[in-house]
Image 1 (cartoon, rainbow, N blue to C red):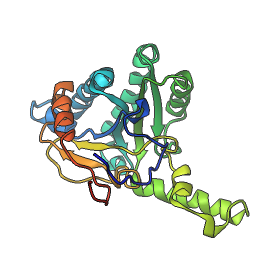
Image 2: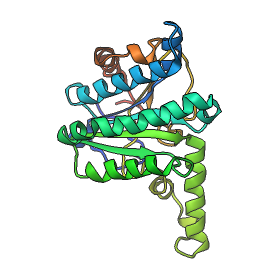
Image 3: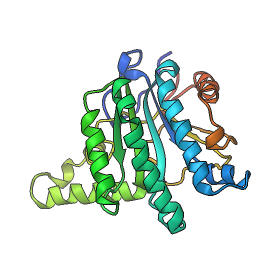
Length: 251
């Protein structure tokens, strides 16, 4: 089956090659509702959600997922209660400390996207540390979006390009899609093939707006703490039956 190929935002990916293994992005929604349904504090749902993330990362090689990008905290999530925000930030730090050895041993490369500026310096230092510790790993690429928003990312990339033009390092007429991509948080990563959102909501919520231009989407009613690798396998099996035209015609 021959398909017209889109312009990739990240690295060049050739069909059938090892590098063409799937990039799946997940909007991990429903932690709070899962906890509320059990009359538990929302943070309990987030802790359970972190366990599900760990399980999915471990299952990625068997599922054929080489790149996994998860939406952990958006630029809009600061509007939540101070208690929940602080609890989430603490959870992120504990996850890194607890999982670092296993992540490194299992060949997982961990990266973070989003604006780190407002985050606690200790948490930013942890991000830097785990990224450096796993930089040589290539079995699974785990990207975690924290204080991330698609529009904010595009704005920051545009500012970076504008600075390069103003400094005479780049001609305005020379700015291409690839130029913008190189200034995005996800520079060097391939576009997501599939975006999955849990909890029954059917919206993209400002996630990977540039990168997911040609992604397939799946919206499942399952709340994230109940989402298992087996459910992901079912979704991937169905995804494998889809015909991706990228704006072209299948021949």
